[in-house]
Amino acid sequence: MGFEQRFVNVHDFQKAAHRRLPKIFSDYVDGGAFSETTLRRNRADFDLYALRQRVLTPLADPDLTTRLGNQSVALPFGAGPVGFMGLYRRSGEVHVARASEAAGVPSVLSTFSIDGLETVTREAGAAPDFQLYIDKDPEVTAGYLDQARRAGVKRIFLTVDTAVTSVRERDVRNGFRSTERLTPGLVWQFARRPAWSLDLLRRGFPEVELVRDRPEFGKGALAQASHLSARLEKALTWDLVQRLREDWSGQLIVKGISDPEDAAMARESGADGIVLSNHGGRQLDHGTSTISQVSLVREALGAEKLLYVDSGFRTGSDILKALALGADFVLLGRPFAWAVAAGGEAGVARLFDILRTEMTLTLQLMGVTSIEDLKRRGPEVLIECR
Ligand code: FNR
Image (cartoon, rainbow, N blue to C red):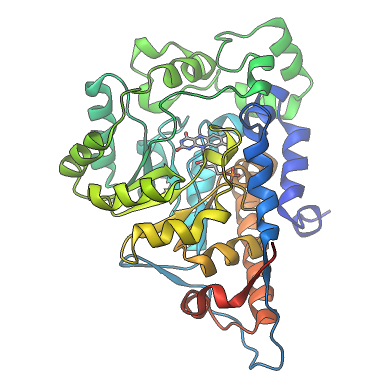
């Protein structure tokens, strides 16, 4: 069966990823915090908005290009930072960066990446955007920034919603972040996923490139996963954002804002924009969905700053709703991890195709001619369903 029949929508990648990945990793990707209420709400709240259908309008292929500040991009969505992509398939980070380059959109590389900035930039032919975590040792953080400068990164995303790591119950049960070595249970899980095991373990158990030479992070990705989160700076405050603003001359986006008051603080901090995000429901449980906050956050942030949004986006219509409500660009997390696990670079290319087709047809049925037209018309293309 060809790719087009195997992968018809985003959920087909999720099913294929489950068949390929050991449970410790598929649960890590899929899971949310505690009772997973925020995770579910992220999806459910897309139903608060319906799309208006308009007929007998001139029909042409809608133009999906859009502006991201002073940059023109081919599509209004792309890959957000997802840690350990290279664990779901060998060279996972490179697959995402290459397919994104080919699709004409920027992608964001996580601090917690198996193939880091140096490798990805070399293999993809251009530096990705970079997501920065602040380590409690300022020297380590300065080292991350130096690598970003050396690679030629133009935009960094400072993640601010993980000063503490929430409890993801699936991870606790599986020992993700508490198991540092292969246990008999893990060996059994890996043995039941031979395709994954052969692909990955051929080059030895992977490590996070950015901290490979730092013994304080331990050896191997499993140990590093526990150390990396435990080492995140807990005393993150707005001063730190301002200091980073002085230190970093490229674009600075603050990722992990979900409250309008924090969006206003971000505007004052000198950041170029924010990602309205609840970390895909992985941090605060019983929080709001992000789609329900787009208008309020846009209002607080002002029209000039970049507004990215993520958490729960799975279809072309989800993306269009956020753009109509005031977002500039949408990031997706898990769908890229599933596509990498399911099909590597070709899988990610297929993910772009699926969402591109969904957006094209939906815009045509709405009688909207382009993404810029949609953004101009704004919420009038939607009907609120309360
Ligand atoms: C993430 N996310 C994330 N964010 C970040 O800033 N740095 C990181 O290293 C990671 N790592 C990570 C791993 C995994 C497995 C997931 C699922 C998510 C959060 C990510 O960037 C994004 O905010 C959410 O994934 C968006 O929600 P969806 O699209 O996954 O629903």
